[in-house]
Amino acid sequence: MVELKKEGKIRYLGLSGVSVTTLRRAHAVHPISALQMEYSHFTLDIESSDILKTCRELGVTVVAYSPIGRGILTGQFRSYTDIPEGDLRRLYPKYSEKNFPSILKLLQALGNVASTHRSTPAQVALAWLLAQGPDIIPIPGTKSPARMNENAASAVLHLSDQEVEEIRDLVENTHIEGTQYPAAVMVTLYTDTPSL
Image (cartoon, rainbow, N blue to C red):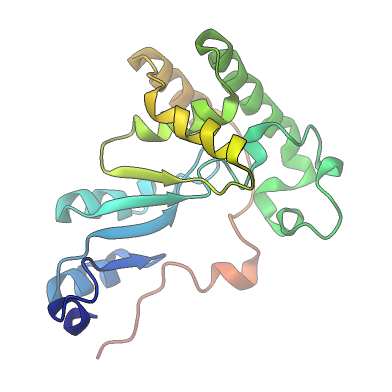
């Protein structure tokens, strides 16, 4: 990859889903510009695993995927049974049926903040992530131009410091059990790459 950059074929190097050790090893070879990690109201793992701290130390931007919880924070699902059969979200432990009361509580709180800003819960979720620092860039998936415009509008939605803190308190105190992926996938995340 470094050779491709030297040849001008790429401008920046980024990684996805790596451990702190791998990030440091890669950064020692060539500066890493971005690290793509899941970061949302359901997945704050990068904060507790020193990944975010290390990114900030090294000047690496975090590209936050699934920032609206794979669409859960749009409010399109009001119960677990609203998730269609065969939908991959049914396989994710954190979106399990037993977690849905907590998910709805979180969604309601985001909706309350959204109503004061004449916005949507998804926009508040994105604005909250943006408020975590200028080095956080959420990349929500979208299936329509209307959703794309809705998501983009979150960039100009300013949450007060109090709202940001209240949302954080809610997120940290909302009990949602389970991992971000099924067990078979979790063993592959944040692992160290073999030494060269």
